[in-house]
Length: 502
Image 1 (cartoon, rainbow, N blue to C red):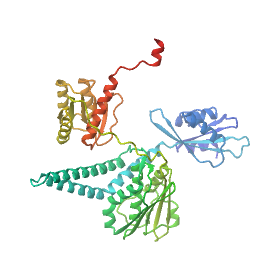
Image 2: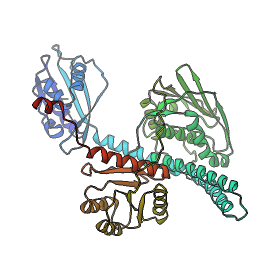
Image 3: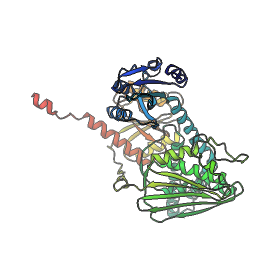
Image 4: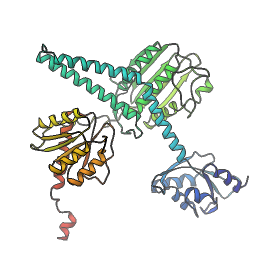
């Protein structure tokens, strides 16, 4: 096949080719290269420079291509595109065997669509996980609410002693914290921009959380859980929600493999600097030819005719491997038909210094007396709670339920700071912030929401408080914002340049 024929075929794949001689001069450039990738290379260096704007990556790419061997793996690149987005590439290079002068045949393929498709499918997989454990979440919330309702009624009884009331308040608070943690976990798994922060996490805690949420389904399927965890397992540096997703996927795969009941065995051990997690079942197992492909995207481990309570995208295990490898670990599988399956994850222990938990934030809640605070939330109970809490700290607070009322208040009263619910009927939090700044330009605003809110960079005096929050967090955030405003108002010391100029 001629070079032009190859070029025509590649065009349909969003790919193009270029050929360079041993001196790095371009001897052939497919006509569609400029249309697809916005480049017209004259030399190998110009070609590589057009692929990446990162000097370090450019040097690495040049070195890799210049010393290419037949059958090299693809090189993945990302660069900004003309539409202020990101363009993903796959680059492969081959030596042309018929030539003796070291000519290079280079193929470039755009993979942006594939990346976006993968991200969308991963998002759907996360949402499927939330749906799959809905029964467990509802059961957990029912337990929490039952305890809170019961202890609230006890505290209201006339015969209740002060000690009983105090105990009731403590228990209600503990259950509210449990509900808060559960809500945060569900939101973090489901949201598109899931946080990728790494921190020391306990694999034992993740395993216990997953088993607790799936226990209703496990009982319904008559599956016995055997839990074997070593004592004193060290934390590993990881993203809690990403690993939580892996555990849920693997446990649910084990459940699907035991439609008639069985035993789920979950083991966590540590040897030196590695933690080993095994999730095994005594269910259907897999044939060797199936096992070879289980981590391939869109390949389902379910046997033909196998019933399941959920639809499989074939992406769960591929995503599991991707997540584990992102954490510097490995995932393996052992399985035999009708003899069960065991997945084994190996993850490194957090290194010294990485495992140190951050120092707890001080919760002293002293704020300057006499502050005048505006609170805007369409839930009256929340506004009233915040108003009461701030007034207990000698601040003056006004709570309103609509953006329109908040704007009217600002026209007649000066405020030192404002708490604004980001999602409200009528004026949204963002619109309200703009309206309030039009009336009081220097007003510090703290947005409140149950999801992460990206504050526009053109809003200079703004902060964020995530719901659900407690009273101490409200007071701490207010003090933090007021101190930031105070620092910004202080005169700046002369710079070295100004000193020299004087």
